[in-house]
Image (tube, rainbow, N blue to C red):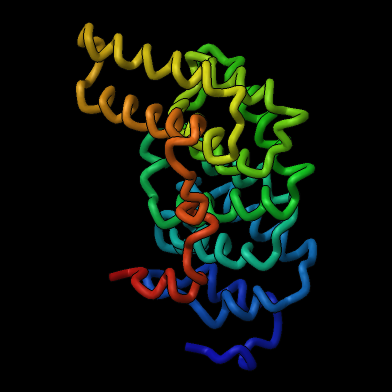
Length: 265
């Protein structure tokens, strides 16, 4: 593995990330993280995250005649790790785009999704006046569609930083919307941040899940899980339990070097 001093330019480090498979390119990631944030780095990160599921870029061997670039399929993950030291609201559209994939199979890349969860929560916490609102508007836009994206809950961690004194009513509308996927997760977030105005809606959702369970309208296991999660949120909002804020992923994940020690095992 190359030492940091072996890289003479950003472009050299980009080349390592672009074509490294399987083995974490730690030195190149660290070199890029240590560079001043610049349009060149941000543009590269945005491009890679936005195109993570573009098979024309990341599948096939490179050749002059090929329609594919031969880029490593893991390159978007490498650049998402680099992004930890280059957080800017400019990353928000790319993150939401990648976390709200058009195809279900694109949601299966666990390492990449978890990295984006980390970035989304951390970015929203760093820029609470802009990023959470950008995500809120994106979710509202999705819910206007006849069939909203089924992975809306992938972006909900941004709402931990949302100013509920200003936008609480809008978030409550999302919670109550029957087209919202992962409403139980949003209910849990609202409970964690002690938004007591959400309590009646969470109780209603819990009661609806209990009714569906009684009528056999869906999977018994799935409905029982919903009831458990809604009851957990209700217990927090009524003071029976304390929220475990330390368990929130973007706040509890280890430093990236330690976290990715097991990558490729």
